[in-house]
Image (cartoon, rainbow, N blue to C red; front, side, top):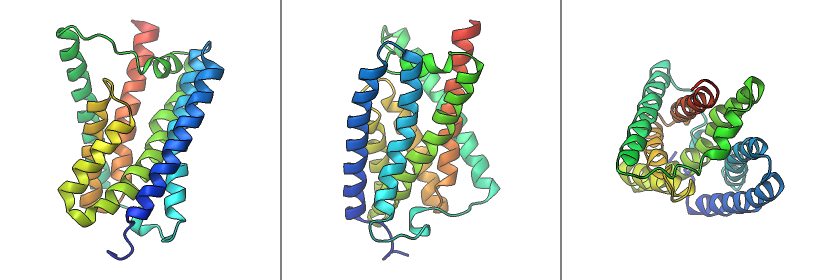
Length: 224
């Protein structure tokens, strides 16, 4: 198993593909949808999923081409429930953090505006946004960041892998108010990956956190 673990070659390919896809397509999306924030939000959500899946596929087919070294295996219900509980904990920690920042005068929470607009565009668009950001994006990002990055770094020890991969995952979301929440999400997902060897508990963490955030945006924009 250790010999089959993804290594630096997979990490480099993952990074190149991910960065190229995000940079090229985010520019196109912003230029083409700047006057339609709902479409922008949906498109950026699709990009979050697509970039992760493209980067993962490039790393997967590079040389190993087997699912187990990338954490593509079944896990138990106990760990999926643990993922759901940690997903709620991450979401609540984000709410607390944002309220603390607001208390101290920081209110420039604008980087997620397009996603909030997409979630508030009516019931059908909300459901589409929920599928994109709370199902497709977690799968794409967890396959990439946990299945490749965390797995590859485990050769240096669990905590090096968990912390470094979580930091990279957080920075990939931008230097903004989302960074600490992305870091918490990464920590929870990477820890579960280390304990189970499976990406699926981390996918559940990600799904629950993103789903609750999207639902909160829908409620806030339509009923409050």
